Length: 134
Image (tube, rainbow, N blue to C red; front, side):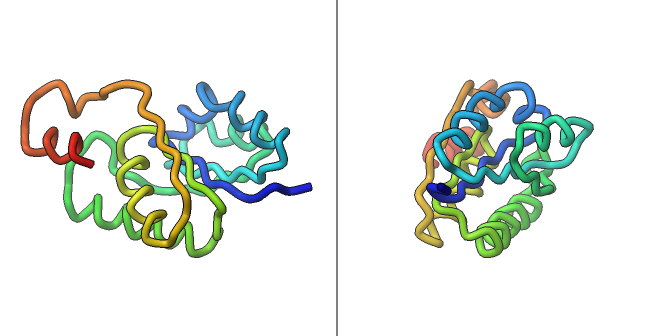
């Protein structure tokens, strides 16, 4: 019996293959359909081998370009409109911020995970303050 569908997103397929496999299998074992969304890399076959569907979600990692980030926010919105998930799980900063904004706009429950502070918090800048606020 399918409990529902959720989208799990990180900034690389490598991250899903190396760190989220146990979570994907546990969610599937609990009846969830899992859709993994991330930029495509050589680890996509390993993600698919977990039994979830992979959706390529281009992302400009490591850069802070407002236009590229707005485009990512719109891509998350399109993904959610197409998939109609019951929940969104975000890992890493851009999925957490832009995926959450798109999910909230559609009334999709969000569970974010922050495993570390990341490069954004190494220096103090306007971006650091924005990310802390979000």
